[in-house]
Image (cartoon, rainbow, N blue to C red; front, side):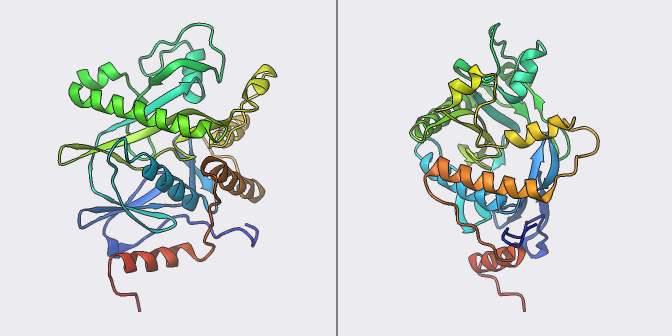
Length: 315
């Protein structure tokens, strides 16, 4: 990568924190009832880790922090502290094994299911929709949470309850909360000149209370489009102007990659472009810059976590 770009954080390995659990993007450790979530710079698409984007982990963490603070009036969240630009410390909660996806527009996998003639997580959409069209009202299209390396599986709300994955009364609370969060995000983003196309939420239980976990309204979990150019671009048959991760998915699909087979080689120049994309998107969404710490990320994270946990420095 060019010398001006921060050093990418590929992974962490901190045995002194305990056993590491690696997801597609985050490494996590559980210690003393806390879950330490470290956002690496890994970029995933189609449930595969594709490459790294320098600084991405810092953007994701700071954006999640921004939204957790703004959505605290809707639902309790797991966050205790953000001791490093890449690190979020949360209370350990019992995660509900369903990804709760809320969609205000038909795009991405929902569009691919729709044109294939399939329901979208059990939701039958009206005939005659075009790609990127706004839906009459937001819909929930959940999926099951699968192990790392496996594709998440769409599931209907009815199946979630009938299969005993989530009790009906709890699912009603989750549904109501997810829609409230999406509405809050939609209204705030409208003030920034953005359309909130879709997002996913993860919930857990803490002493019987519903708690929002993982991340919220980030560039990896959501789609954000520029409102001012939306109608014109659709009239021309073009995609909306996107601030999210969708451009990399389209770049990969143009090279005939949809999750199967070898991953295309991604040039450093394109990775640098993606870093700029994440930083510019952060500013449009929040109105402020995301200041990237360019120091050695592994050493910095270890130092900051040892300070936070009151552990002695490594000699």
